[in-house]
Image (tube, rainbow, N blue to C red; front, side, top):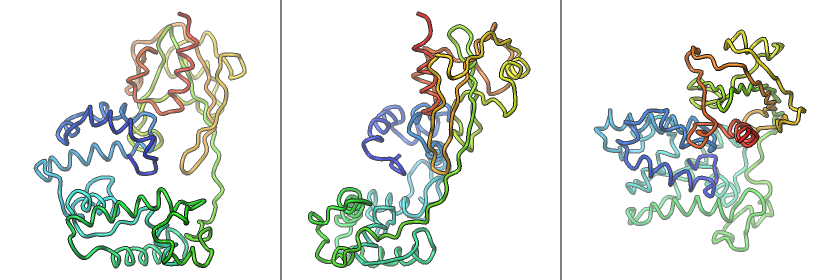
Amino acid sequence: MLQQTQVVTVIPYYQRFLARFPTLESLATASVEDVMPLWSGLGYYARARNLHRAARAVMAQHNGVFPQAPEAIAQLPGIGRSTANAIAVVCFGVRVPILDGNVKRVLCRVLGIAGIPGTAALESRLWQHAEDLLPKYDLSRNMATYIQAQMDLGATLCTRSRPQCIACPLADICIAHATGRTAELPQKKLRRVTPERHATLLVIVHENRVLLETRPPVGIWGGLLSLPELPAEENAAAYVEKKFGARVLVASPPSSGDGFKTFLHIFTHFRLHITPLLCRVSLRPSAMEVGFFWLDLTALGTAALPTPVRRILEELRLSQPA
């Protein structure tokens, strides 16, 4: 959960997740449909699917016993070298380095290492330095403390902007601090133009129910519930009748006063402009394509919804007549 997400955001999700799935076995035997609602709003949903797959892999391939070797841990879905090493260190005291974003920043500044982030040459060099600096004695006591200290130093003092060098325990040996290069190291990645995309989401409503679809397991909002998207150049009323067999009574544009405005949602690699379009239909067809179903607006709390969709539906719920 902490990958790409701050601790303060993760804590309530972590607590709810462990309350629902206290053991590997309980997670492995659950369906992915049971797992996804507990990740709703946290983002980066591939993490949830990989965590579920990893639990099943441990049960099937390791007889339910979590592996201790970093190489074996790294074979589990969604776990790379650094995360595998961190698990091995903290849980089992194995002597291996990690190299997350915080540790990279600390190493680049303390050792005065320049280079383009993400390149193979720099990554290889940092891995070697990280390994050379590992504790050599009393590993069962020192390894986890050392690795956690590296991460915490980067997260709290040696931050990306405004590092607190005056409070840093490594200030006396830090090359970036001594040479006034803390703002330069690590080198900044070349900024790329972020693509802009647009989507019209159909909020198809009959009485107190809204039509949702289950997203494909991969891609944007994989495995979550979403609103159907209106294809480009399609007329909303004609599309809804053709696709779902429901006649649209009212199709409200965003400026109609229903509270639905076009808004921006930012993903890692692009920016999505979302326009919700409210479509009230005359009836609720009982025969639906696989993957589509009607959800009662009172059940939003337990539905696996991405944040933008939840925002739209919560606004819809509040606007519904009592």
